[in-house]
Length: 436
Image (tube, rainbow, N blue to C red):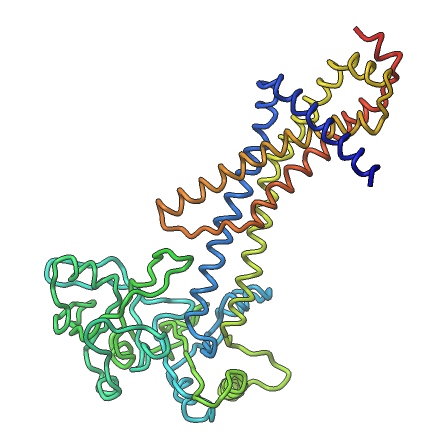
């Protein structure tokens, strides 16, 4: 116990000497700390923004429901697995007949919806016109009467269309919050029953969908859309079945959304949907799927891989500034050792050991970098909060980010301070005392 107390007292005395040395050389210490501050600010700020975006993105994906299955011509899942984009683009289009087959043949199916104009390849973008006003280009989708149910969306005014209206190809529209806000809300106009022009056809608005969760907590166009009956969509924009060659097949893009009924599991429905689609596409056992089945779990796993890669890349880039700061620490500590050669000789002459000299200069280097780390953490957190308040971009400032910043700064101090400290510890006391 007494040995531990003695070592602690020695460490404390050495730390006090290190702080005194840094306090005396304020300008030198400040310039040395600057590179560390920049590096830690970058790391903490980027980590806070990416982790916040990551968490918000996961929440957005989870809002689609854990049991919802999407069938698409291709998706980011195939791209991430290394599949050729050209080959995927030449896959057969997803069609209304596919959705009808799934609804008819899958025992576990509860709700099936087809989204024309929303899949990969050729999304349908058009403007809505109301009197003298117009919206920006919106995503126009042809759906069944189940769009709201599959998306867990809320109708804040009016209603959605019925199955009979879909079958009769009625010119009806349910608009998202974006066009509602730009055409009607700002002028305090009730949109229900109003006629808007989409291309050359007039549509009657029968409903408004409320705001949907944005990607990363921000509005990135998730409310800029309108849905019309898929039968009406096919009449105006063409059939998704058309194939005129080329990489995108010629017809409007399409996706199928499927939800199992109560009592059925998602995995069971997934197997049934895959089997039905393989039969419809005449795929033998030795052939891979020429369509993608997307689930919440798969999307979350893919996003996790992407976010980790982005975070690692940014940390590596930010570490360049830390390396520059570390080189500055090494240079300043080397100069300090040279200037204090006589002091080191005196300390050794009165009994200071190598490890004590080594510890003193290491502590000076670590204190320098840790001070820079604390300032960098404060600056990075401040920048993240300012960006969040100014733009609504989500941030996350967990304790792990602060620990990461301090850990990086202390590691830089040890790594780049070890050479000057070892040089000081190895000085011969006689030669050091003779140094002028």
